Image (tube, rainbow over all chains, first blue to last red; front, side, top):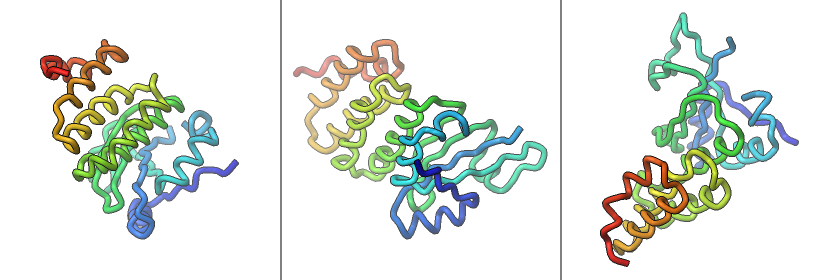
Length: 32
Length: 155
């Protein structure tokens, strides 16, 4: 099984989305 | 979520194949630019953006696997819906309904599928059929109540 290939920076994710045409799924999480 | 839905192969495959997934850590005592930009008030908060970064779907709070997959599918469909690509949106709404009929997002998918059906055909029966489907499958949902005006449309 492949792990989820998370980006950690929205701007970087946006760059990849623009190139690939894929939408972005963004998870705001708290490491509490 | 790390030991729940995100550990499921179906979720990992869907996120890796259909989205650019990004995790943004929240710091309540020192709000970051992304927190302010998207008005984050609680975690987890999930957003679906189009490739240009415009938000089309948001949900807040832990969701189990079936609900998460339904929200992901709904988010993809709403990008097409919000930009008037109703013919393309319909199969994505229908995929949510067929694959995740018990998910919390399913009634919204049913309602918006009906709107896309009407917008792409201009046939009001699409709205009446949506009302009937919502009343039959999701009678207690807010979306069934939103569809109530369509009950007067003749089939």
